[in-house]
Amino acid sequence: MTDIPHIAQKTPCPVDLEAGKTYFWCACGQSKAQPFCDGSHKGSAFVPTRFIAEESRTVWLCGCKQSAKQPFCDGSHKGL
Image 1: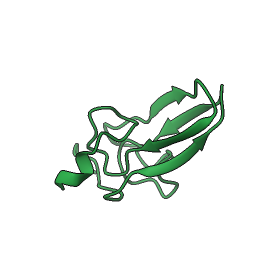
Image 2: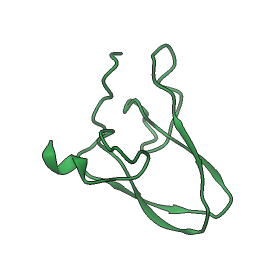
Image 3: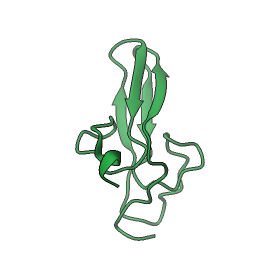
Image 4: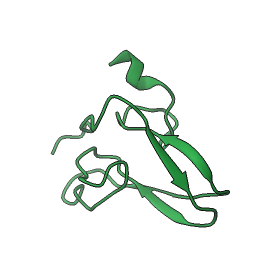
């Protein structure tokens, strides 16, 4: 695995978050459970991004792994 994340998909992932729940967003792009971590990063420099949902709502998580606002989509996929 390189230091450059794998582009898992070129679109954001809509996800329904549950308030107070902890999530681990995949930063390496190799997870089979996109957009969440399944441990595929082990042995690499990547670590998942941990976040806690402040409220129950639908969000768009980054699928291309290029967002400057990780784990959230910032539209970076449009330039790929």
